[in-house]
Image (cartoon, rainbow, N blue to C red; front, side, top):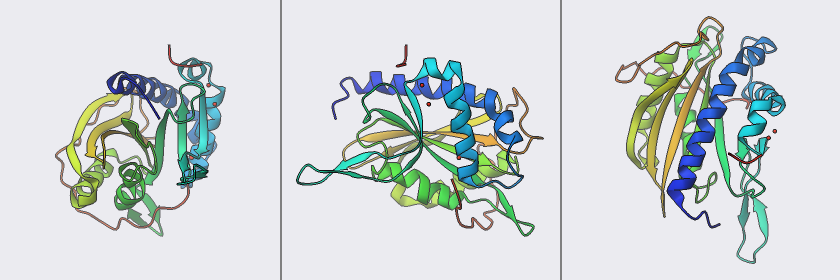
Length: 244
């Protein structure tokens, strides 16, 4: 795949990410309203993609928003095969190899009265898929979308920060670096060395708890050390003219 000017494409992906997150925040209350208090990842993502696909602003941002998008790999004989399923892919045009990938993970899940941060699977089963180029092969930008089920953003960020620091295969070049919040969405950025290139991962954390989803809420939890509790197991998973 030939992207041409990588920096120009990186800027285009970043613009698409920020504009999409703005719309996600607008649509987030509708998404939460139809879901149970402890939804699965798929329940959240399916309903979120459904709302994004019907949103007229999103239709001006991108060509299509796809749930469980399958990027293709190429075998030695030239045959194509599926490399897996990306939770959300934002296609900017008809070229299916140029996409903005969102790997979605639940965080701070309570089961039987015990809270599990799920920060470890966020790293090992989420971020690592970009490092191996299972997702976003040859692309400069990838995205992580965290659903914070109990709404405790500072705790979630602290646990993710610790899990990133503890996982050497991430090949961290820079970060985590706090980014400007978009409304109530906490954001940070990490940069990683891959086999033949560098990828920037843009992390966005959405508070699922209604009490925490307040517009313009700014939280700066970086540097806050939190004890690592049980990270638990990751369970479950959560359509559009080219960028102007």
